[in-house]
Image (cartoon, rainbow, N blue to C red; front, side):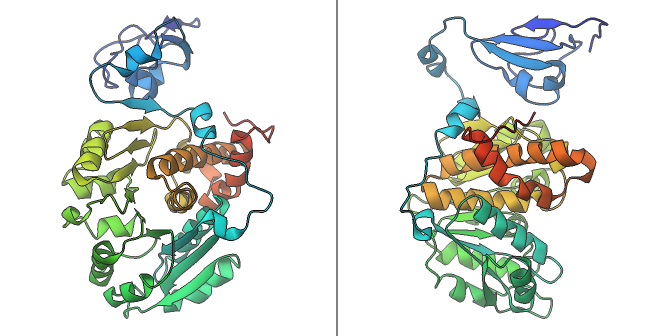
Length: 371
């Protein structure tokens, strides 16, 4: 980058950045602020180029929205407070818990009960009416002690404290609106048998994360969504790389392409986590999330997101809307936690504690304002 001792305001793009890619193509100005015209460009919102844009302001210069929407190529949208806020509706005074969905979290194994707890509480904090955690029998007392608000159900397990394939019989007996599967399950063969059986037999919408994705790395063809059953996957770059037979670095270099290609080919919703989380839909739409920070790079924050997505899916019955709302609020909760704890000390529990405040903030009922 080319540095200067005085503030620099760039018009549309800092000189030297590309309008079509976030990759650096040579020397560029290091702007303090960029006033971009009509709509944001990829280089202003995605790394590494975004680091040279400074604060970004979008200026309306009279180009009709219809003109932009009719352009050829992939549809990519930046999530905004205004768009996401419209997805949250006030609750009626006579509401009851059955109105807000039933979520089943299948997770946990010996030594990894915290992941199941965080996913379950993420679902509760995001408004699900009822949340049950199905976990290996030896893990159930720990999960139950961590959260009295969560219902629990024991599952058959092997000698390693991991769920076994036969447990799918029990899981599919429950009446649930959404099943979130993966946090803390472990990576043994018995877990793989369970996840594959769940994909084959369950007619309930699925949110798959963490170990549920890892055990499918050798068989990603099973991840096929259907019109009657949505599947949402929430991989970090390493998990995404295993699903597509690539490396994490290669995924990071082409986050939008990788997420969109997998989503459209497998007819699933992909939430590719990381800085500027990407949401890709089976129809080829792509959303970029602007909220969140480096303090969220700590164990357990993804488990909270899994629960939040499941909860909003149970309430909205719209997979795309659930992903958009959960990802935006999850990042906002992280921004609020960063303000109180900083990047280094922040934990997933700190983020979880701010989910309610992030919802209040989004709906204009709180004076807190994360950066």
